[in-house]
Length: 112
Image (cartoon, rainbow, N blue to C red; front, side):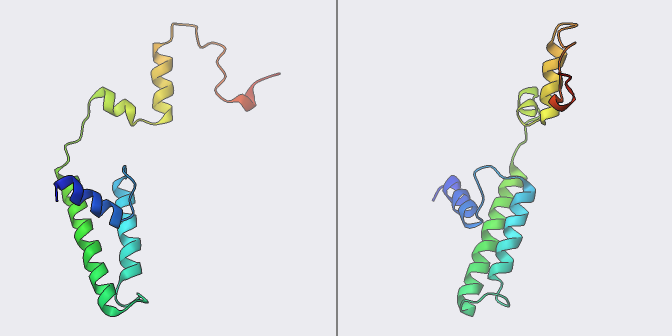
């Protein structure tokens, strides 16, 4: 099994989408480990123990991958993952002077 296949299997086991934040990864892990914890699980103790072990292993694999991931801080990447406000500022910063004079950002404040 390739590294990609292992990570994909772990992602699926943890019920994660293809893109997930660290908070989403941790929340999904916590939800699943609570569900399958041998003290709370309604399945057989052996099944719960095995599933808990699989969830822990998947989480460790995903976290190891995340720790080794090299983040990009290039302008292109930062802008791609920026906020809506960042997008507006980038558009407004490139507009010629006076081009945004009549721009209405909040339609509810526009006069009829």
